[in-house]
Amino acid sequence: MLLSAAMDEVRLDLFHGLFALHPPTDGPARLSRQPNAPTSVPDPSTGRDLKIATVDIGSAAICPDCQTAGAGGYISFVSDLRMAYACPACQRLVWVPGV
Image 1 (cartoon, rainbow, N blue to C red):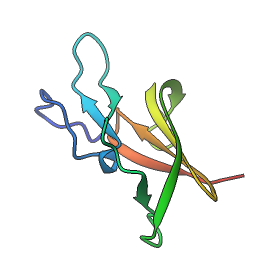
Image 2: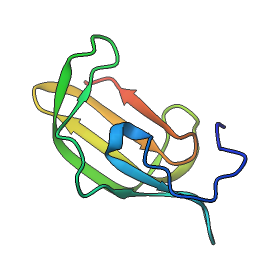
Image 3: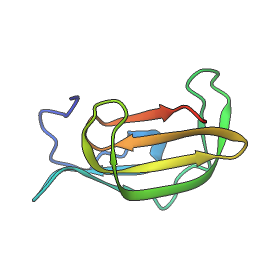
Image 4: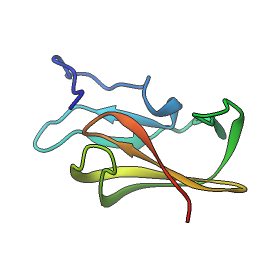
């Protein structure tokens, strides 16, 4: 896991500004949506902007990367079958291939 040694403040620099990562208080770290979030994020392979279609936060899920159960955030994109999962445990935006 990539958790910071001193995770005692809200992190806004992760997940391309879509979510804020809040430190654990009485449970695991959690995400919240940013009110002025961008409308697109860069494709990790090409760098081109992908327009965001939907953002879902707080859904129970297992991170495809670190395998930690938690409540992260899902992002879907316009004209792209992939999704991305924002994991509060490993602090990564994990890209999930489309079907």
